[in-house]
Length: 420
Image (cartoon, rainbow, N blue to C red; front, top):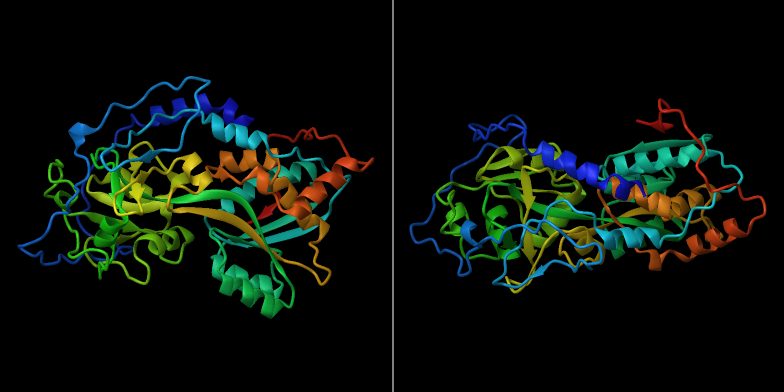
């Protein structure tokens, strides 16, 4: 798989990128895209959380080697343990999961068009999938658009798109509404897993955080804490930036990344007005955390950079902390894991058109999952393929007219046949 073949090269590139010069200048004023910070009046009797986060000097040295035959266990931390930021390594467990997906057996020919609308988060991944699919079927046209999950579901019912791409589970109410308005059944096809992450600057000594502390930092009503949390010393009294105020960076609250975070840490609450900066996208949040030592933000696992780091998160009031690793996101053990899905409505006979079936079959093949993993996402589960995918795979393998499984060569300058 190319994700494995290039892993060491990617690791060298990432480590090399960490050496570039970065000016860690503190933000002086909010830009037009930011919410101007309003300094709150801190109470003189503020309470420091009973279990402060681990100070810098107690962090264990990073592990630099992983034996080839070692099973990498999910990273779950006890309340007195420290999460170690691991170097870039090849995750053999994830590679084995991808190998377990069936091979994609092409059919003789496919023509037509596929319109996919929805999550901006997975649009680049769908572009990569469509490019790989076009190497087999150049006569298939793709139109991939963003615009958000909610609008995509409306367009799916209206018949103006074939797939709605959604970076979360549909609610029961949404499924019922689609069935009611379309008059037919709906199918959710999970093609990958992602994670919303709490991100800080790489030089910040903090390593883990609880849901209650996140609520105290981000929510204006801080329903899970007695007092709001304004300064780093309230999380770690020994932090070298303890006197500094925490600067918050978030993206559009309607994005699936932010929805996953708000559902976890501050349901039905709105963001504070204290040192609160609005960025245009989750990737921009990561950039801010790379630049500013006092920053904390919410971004996507796939956007991580060497000058930023993710925090282990506790959803049980500090009893256990789970890091956002590929395996923890795959298993769902990480509390802010989320599925990436293609949603479609069936016809009156309860079927999908053959072209849509084959694209879904391609996405849930070893080739498709390799593309998805290269885009920064954890795979779907090869043991839980939809039944219609299993049947389609069997039919393609049994068909005497099936074409060879080797991908045809494509000129290096060829562009994917995908509408912007």
